[in-house]
Image (cartoon, helix red, strand yellow):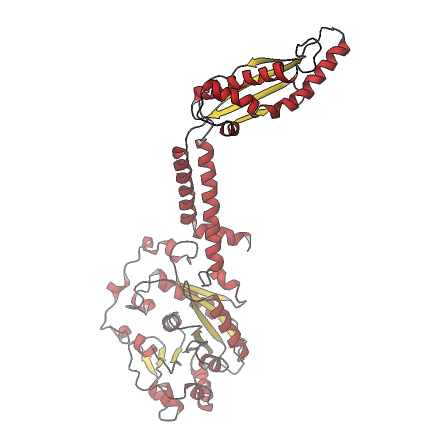
Length: 479
C-alpha cells in the first residue's frame, strides 16, 4: 500500500484507533494501581588495600589489586555465606534463595566501588536489609576470605561503607507515567493493526480510490447514499436541488464529455447501464441520469433492457405491459410503444412481457434495427441491462451500443465481483466506458463531497413544495 492508503485508513478508522489508545491508557493505569509498590535501597562500599609502603609503585599496585578484586566480590554478594547471616539476624520470612532474587550488586567500571541494591515492598526494611548485607559482606571478605594466607593474620583488603542505605522516599515500581505511555503506545499500535487488517481483509468497494486499483476505466461520478431512495427513486425530479440530485447532474456532465469515437453517420450516443450483481442501484441511476440529460435539452430514449426483472416502468410510473419485447417480435412498432415522460424530451420504452429467451431477442437482427432507428432520432439512448455476472444480456447489448457503464455500490459490491464483471465484459467484446459508484456515505473519508457543501445554506428550499402533481411536467411521476 502507498502512503495515501495508510492516511485513508487513519481517517476512516480514527475512532477505532483512538478507542484502542484510550483502552491502552486505562489498562496501563489499572495495572499501575494493582501492582504492589517496590522500593529500592542502595549501599556503597569502597575496596582498598592496606599498604604500609608509601612508594608510588606500591600504591599503584595496591590500587590495581583492589580494582581487580571488586569484580570477584560482586558475585559473592548474593551467596549464602553473605545472605544467611542477614536472614538470621533480621529474622526474615524469606529464604536465602528468595532474598537473593531481590538483591543485586555491581562494580562501576574502573572503580574500586561495590554497589549493593535491595528491593522490597517496605522502604524501611529495604534499607535495613541493604545495610545488613553490606556489613555481612564486609565481615566475610575481611575476616574470612582475604585473611587466609596473610603472614600477620591481618586482611590486606579493607572495605569501607562510603554511603549507607537510606530509606527511599518514593517507589521505583510501578512507574505510572511510563506505564501510561507504554499503554498508549501499545493501544495505538493495536488500533492501527486492527484498522489495517480490516482494510486488507475487506473485499468490498468503499470509495472511488478502490476502483482505481481495479480498472483503468474513468470514474464518471459518485452518487450519495439516500435512506429514502426506495420511496423517491427519481430524486432528480422529486427533489432537484438536493445534493444527491446534483450528483446525477455531475454524472450527466461527465457523460456528455465522454469520448466514444462515434461513427460519422450515427447521431446519438448509446450506453448500457449494468452492474456486477443485483441491488447496486443501476436502474435508479439510469432513470435519474435520463431525466438529468433531458433537462439539459437533449432528446433521450430510456430503454428497459432487463427482460428478466424489469423495473423502469415501475420507477417512471408508466404502464409496462407493452414494450421492447413486442417490438422485437414484430407485434408492435417502436412509435406505438414509446411513452413520453413529462414535458421533457424523454421517452421511455418499457420491457413489456418477460420472454423465455431474453438473450436471443436482445442479440437479434430486430434489436440491431431498433438501435439504428433510435440512434437516428435521439441524442442519447440509455439501456438498463441485467447484472453482468448473472446473464450475458449486458455483454450482448454492449456490442450494439457505444459501450457499458458499470454501477458499483459502496460498501456492498465486492472487488472480485467487479473485477470479474470487467473481465467478462472485455471477453465478450464489449467496451467499458466508465464506472459510477452509488450509495457513497455523505460524511467521512469515503464521501463524495456534496454532503459537506451544505446546499441548504445557499437558500434552496425543498423541491417537494414546488411540485404540483397535476402539472403537465409531473404527468409521468409515480405517486
